[in-house]
Image (cartoon, rainbow, N blue to C red; front, top):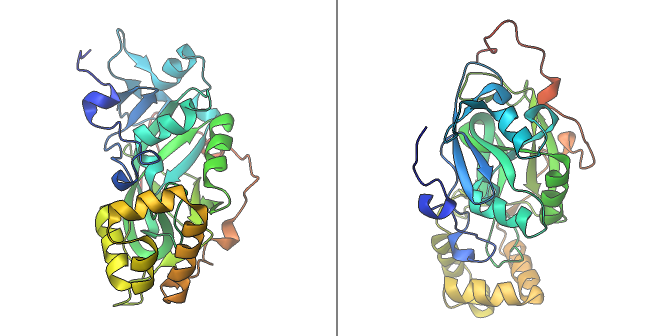
Length: 296
C-alpha cells in the first residue's frame, strides 16, 4: 500500500474545462485508474478481466469490482464502456459533470489502444466557449484513448451534456480493434461524435488535428478568418469569454466555420448510431478461457 496523495489536486488533474475553457480538453488520466470523486486510484493491471484488476492505495488488496461494491456502486459487468475523445478523458471534468448532479463519480478510466479512429475538432463552438474535439474514422490511425466505464445513470448524465451537439454510436470491436493494457480485446464501446462535422485544415483539406492546446487552436482560427476576428476576437481569451456568455455569438461563429468552407461532414459513424441503446457491451464478450484474456 502506498500513502501517496491521490487527490485530483495533488495529481494536477483537477482542471475543469467547463469552468476554465482555455484548459480544454483538460489533462487525461495516463494510467488505468478508478476515479472516486476527488481521488484517482491506480489500478494494477492483471491478465484478467477489468473487474479482477486490483485497486492500489487500499488497506488490503482489493479487486476493482469489490472496491466498487464497497462504494455502493455496480460492478464493471453492469457498466458501459465509453471512448473519450475530448474532456471526458479528464478526471476533473468527469467528476464535475457527475457530482454537480449529485451522481457519485465512481468511474473506472483506462487508456485503451484504438484502431481506426482519429481525433479532430468539432465544427461548432461549445456552450463553454471552446472548440471541442470529435472523433473521425481513419483506417490508418492507431490512437490511445481513455475508456470510461459508466453505469446507466452516469451514462444518461453524460448523454445530457453531449446532446444535441454530439450523437452516440456503438463501435464494434471487429471493425475498430480496442486493446486493453492487459491485452484483452473489447467487443465494442460507445463513442460520441459531433453532429456538426469536423473542422478541416485549410492547407490540406484533411481533418484539423484535435486534442492540443485550445488557445493555439483559437488563435489559428482567428488568424484564418476576418469574420471570426470581428465576431469573437481579438484573442483566445476574448473568444471564450464572449462565446461562453452569448449563445447567439456561438451560433454565428459556428455558421462562420461553414461559410469559410472549413467543415467536413461526418457520415462514417452513422451506420453505428444507436443513441437509445442500453447494451452492456463489455458483458457481451465471451467468458475467458481459464485465466488469460484474448490477445491482440
